[in-house]
Length: 147
Image (cartoon, rainbow, N blue to C red):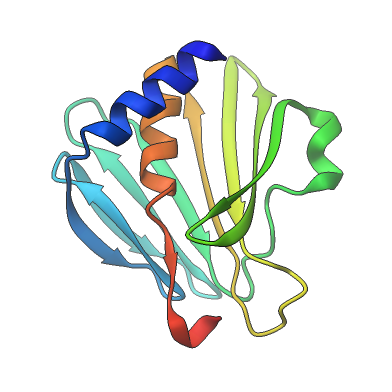
């Protein structure tokens, strides 16, 4: 865990974000090494794929997205934390999946009826994937109109 924190801190000290993408209820910043793909019909779904190796972060944002990571899933996680992203409440958990682990972060306050939650997830291959995921997710900013 100390290694993950160190990787995150190093990454925060040297940000390389180049593009800001609108993901319906908010925005995220992503380096030029990623491609942005939009999809979904009920909510704003899509993915960010790293050009260099194909590693992908998925997202689901909007009123119909629901909250993918929450206290009810804590028992299924090998790691679970409440925190804040862009001033908004968030939860991050790491779940065991066949052949590996998956990290999921949900951002938003379900008690705020007008607010649309934002969910991000990826399959973890290396510790640096965790750091890169957290760096990108930490750039999420809810739009003022969705507060």
